[in-house]
Structures are given as structure tokens and as C-alpha cells.
Image (cartoon, rainbow over all chains, first blue to last red; front, top):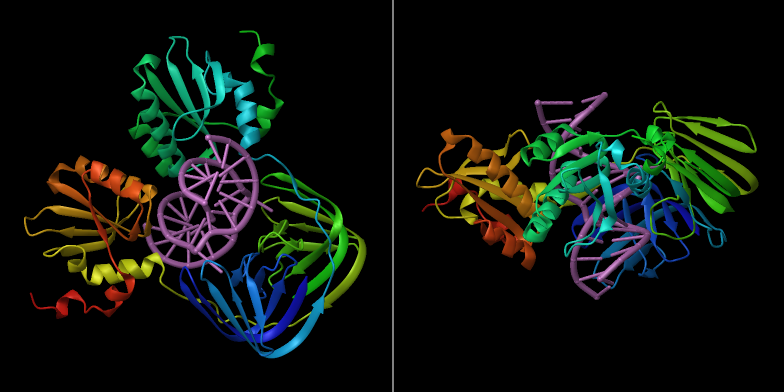
Length: 219
Length: 219
DNA sequence: GACTCTATCTCGGTA
DNA sequence: TACCGAGGTAGAGTC
């Protein structure tokens, strides 16, 4: 990894056009060739960047980084304050817990947390337009399509609507209804979900993790 | 900005839980206090981070960074290979051109580029499920809801469909129709838009920029 | 390769 | 502040 601190200007031309006026910034070049230009604030996102694969032409006072898609960044170096390189080696990578997949697993194991009386048919139920998170049957024998989100946004409701529309094309399934499950459901998403006739359920991840799976509960 | 290259392990607990095994990484601390841990690859996204505002407790061989929301990162430093600080100063910020907002402004100023005879009612027309990009009236007095996208995807068509559905609930508006405008419209989006009864218009950003606003045109 | 969906999304705007 | 939508979204997984 090469770290250059320099007074510079930057021009990007590609999916849009962007320009950075003269200032002191950090230019980070990683081993895979990607380049990122950071200011001294503004969270982790760089001001400008170019992902690998790309080619870097170093003309001394300016760098031109371009990729096969025709995007290009030009960095004019006006004053280099520091320039260092470090061998970091491969990274073993990040281990995560608590993402949507886990929420989905927990819910599939405890579908009664969504609605009493549900029976799991399957998780990741396949359709032509993508898998439905969870599909159940209710005590009346009706299909219940369940969309699980960490944050219940309007996009998720649309997603559920597409799946329901799809399932209803298959008349052999009979009645199909939708349930939208999330840790937090945004107001607009709730309005839309209810307008679409979907039930909306908020669940607590930590409580869910503490619950016994359905096959151990006695109702 | 402080740049530390060190062999380290990292643990994050907050919106989810994450752990980084021992490896050599770059730890970047910006002037606003935010911390990012980078590997030597994987584009611009850090492996772990903590946004400002937060507090950093430096215990020498370990750092504990926590924020008011209850998120926390613990960095164990096993071997510091480099530690440097640089004064970067404020950044004048990024100047962008060609984003959706510009396209929308240009179109609002030249609605005849969408369709001859339209009169602008307002931009960002408010509804319970979000603002409509542009709303016009046509020569017959009908409402026209216009969704503007840089890239015309299926999501944008769905968005327009939601707005139209919403407007039609208000019978006082009379007839309402939709127009989907983008620089490029994906085939699937076009099919869906036309199935929904929306007109589809492709516009050229550069041509649009060269046009005079409506109040200067003489039709 | 194209498509789909998640994200500690980030970031900006606005009510 | 919370909420909403755009993003050069990026990145992962699947078909």
C-alpha cells in the first residue's frame, strides 16, 4: 500500500464528472491497484476513487488512472508532503454476525414470532424473479409470503409485492397473502404495505435470538 | 490525519458484530475523529470503521473507539510498523456535474423537451409516499406525473406507478397520467412502463444543457 | 456475464 | 432530528 500526502487537484470523468479544487489530501494506492483520495473528514468514503482493475500512468507531477470502462481520474500533484509504501499482505477477512441472513434464519426457525399458527414451507422459496425469504402456510391452508428486512424500507415492500404478484399467477397455490417483517419499519413503508394489503410485523433481533425454535415450543 | 500501519485485531459491536483476525492493516484516523481500518485491497471500503462523532481511548496496545449510539470498536495493536500524522486542513469539497438533480432541474426548466404543450405545476410535488420529481398539466388540463432518472431501471417505473396510484386516489385531480424520463431506459423498464400505460422518453443531458428554458422559446 | 439483493451502506436534502 | 431517496452506489451470491 502506497500512501501519498500531497497538495493536489483531481478530475474525474466517467459515470459523471467531478472536480476537486486544490487542497492537501491523502492518496491511497492499494496492492490491487485501486486508488482512493481522502480528505481529513467525512467518514470512510473517499472524495474520489478508481476501483481495480485500472492502469496508473505516473508522469511525476500528475497521475492518470483509467479503467477499461472508459472512466478516468487525473490527479495533479502540486506539492508532495509525504510518500511511503508498506507491505501489508493478504487479509484473512471480516467475520460478521447479525446481518439479514441471520435474522431470516432465526425467523424461519420461529415462524410463530411472525404470526401464531404458521407452518414453514421453505426458506429462499424460488421464483422466476428471485427467491422469497420465507414461505409458510397458515391454519386455513393459505400461502403466506414473508419478506424479511433489517430495516423496513419502501423497496422491501415493492419486493414483496412483486413476489406476491408472481405467486398469484400460479392459481394452484390458491390464496396468497404477504407479511412484511423488519426490525424497524419506516412510516412510508408501512403506509405502502398496508395499502397493498400486507401485514406488517416488527421483530426484535435479540429477543428472537433468545427464543426457542418452534419445534421446542408447546402450544 | 493520523496513519498507523500495524499488525492488529479488531472487534466491532454495534449494528452488528464483526471480528478481524490478526493481520497487518492501515488504521486511518481523520481530523473529525472517524476511524477506518483498511486492508491492502478490496476497493475503497474499509474492513471496519467508526464514524464521527466518537471518542477514542488510547491505551497504548489497544484503542477503544465508541460513539453515542452505543457502537464500539476495539483495536488491539500487536506490532506498530509506522505511525505518522499530517495536517491536511479543510477540503473545499467535491463539485459534481451530471447527477439526477441537475437532470431534473434542466427538465423542469424545459418541460417541452419531455412533451410539447406541458406546463410545469411544480418540482418535488409532495405526496404521502414521497415527492414526485415533476408534475405538469397538459393542454387538455390533465395532470402529468413525471419521474426522472439518470438510468431508467425497473425501480424507477415502480416508483412512478406508486405516485400515479396515489394521485388517482385524489379524485379532484381528474385524469392523471405518467411519463418516465431517463437518459437511458433499460428494455425491461420500457416494457414495464408501457404495460403500465406510461409514456417513455429518453433525453440527452448535453443537448438539454444547451437548450434555452421554456420562457425563452417561442412556439 | 447478467441479474438480484444486501449494506455497520454513505450522503445529501428536507420537513 | 428523523426520514427519504440517490449513488460513479459497492460487493456478494446465484443462475
